[in-house]
Image 1 (cartoon, rainbow, N blue to C red):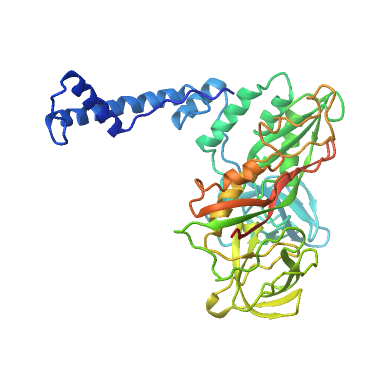
Image 2: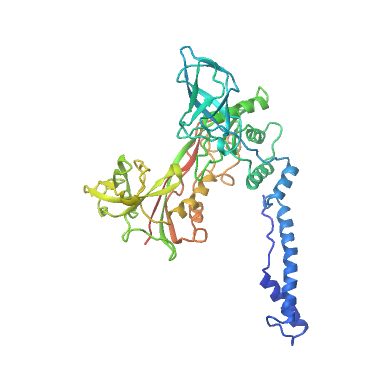
Length: 499
């Protein structure tokens, strides 16, 4: 889509200066000093002009869906027939208890959160006979983020079915419990849906039509992706990314979310359509920078920060883990030549990918000559005691400014889409390739430009200089047609001193 022309907006002072300039042209001898009548006239004229300019700017923005704001987005939604995505509820699995022989659970049987009478309500999704310790699929009756529940949350049946115990426990699925609940779409999300339709109009059961319908199945779809003719004529692969429930959260849909979309698509389209719901698999990647902090930012916490970045296989990683407070670190490639040893008192950082944050660990003791066994100081809570490192993740020196890097890098990954499912390029260049087409939309490869511009000094004022040393070129693995596609995710983040 062509970028609309930019409307040049003068400042109030520029308008005042222009007014006084015209007055001097008309009367070179006039006094235009501050406080005089011509200066006061210029200020009044500028204030009037600014109101007109503000309206002109709003009209200019509203003329294009890509720049429309707030209520103007709703206007474009009416024109294009794209309604704002509504609030959705969560879904997942609960584990039940049952007497010998089990019990019949009807679809729609209600559950509530134990001890929370005014909380969200949930319903059984599939009628069937269920037995002790079996998983039961449920869906929230209410909508919104509050319907997302962590694993091990205890629910209670409002009216327990015969043979079924009174409680049900939310099952842990890849670290998530009940997921998919979200509030109604923001204007920015509505705008993205409008632009998606304008770029690739749906109709006549084309793949854009499938993607449009995938958004309507009660799952918080961030973007839907299709692979037309993925296994030949009449077949279409479909997968989606979902809105993360928190900063840096998971965008991979659960199996239940995909099944729910698939059931809705089967109902919406003809029986002769072959829609292949494609599982999306996270492909964690590592990004690393060397940085110099700006003068006003919190710099490296240790006077001589450890570790530093080393080209090759000498960078420090987690080797083995005993607990959150005792683990072993060493060179990635076991090459310790020229690699300084850590020392007590050094403050190191580890990236907690699940919660999109750096955690600090202060070294208490060091044993060994490479690799090194560390114990962590917990005096007066100087170290994070909850996060347990992961074998293979990189170790960085600590700085209070690291949070700024996290906030800058996460949007790069939230703009990525799944990779291709076939290797090479089709003869016609389109069929079997993912739509929306990458890299113009939803790229599936990390680039130096994206990763470096995200942490430019203009965007991250805590930085004086930066250099990307790892992550450039990471590409989603080619998947299996109609079965699986891969999504590059932020698995580890490391930051080292540049000078």
